[in-house]
Picture 1 (cartoon, rainbow, N blue to C red):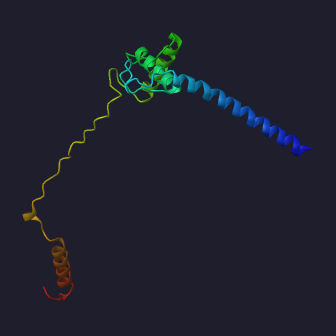
Picture 2 (cartoon, rainbow, N blue to C red; picture 1 turned 180 degrees about the horizontal axis):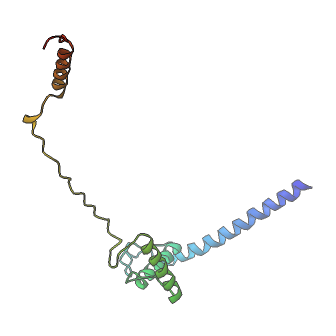
Picture 3 (tube, rainbow, N blue to C red; picture 1 turned 60 degrees about the horizontal axis):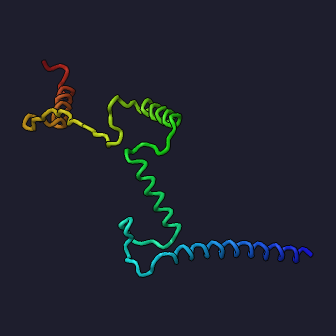
Length: 151
């Protein structure tokens, strides 16, 4: 009984998907068949390659529409409320990163590391420290070896 219901459900599911796919494919094939096959490979309207796929055509139309709407680089179809929220968020970021008025945040920061001044070392005047220490020790040993009664 369970197997029969499961098989029936699987078959119903497969047939439903097949009907959808065939229906969509038929519409897409009809749309693609409307174009003239003897037309040049370039689309006269857009200047780009001719596209037969209706979904690609819709996608390109939406991209062109978006490009025409967002010519000045602002948000497309933004309400004053959305623009106010955007300005608020940008102000938060400016405050968080301590951005000065008029500072361009799109440029990479320029770092300036000045070279520190280095004192010059005159190598001719260096003394051998170890030789001095050995000489001092030798003088101390000489003093220790002097007899106490000799003046």
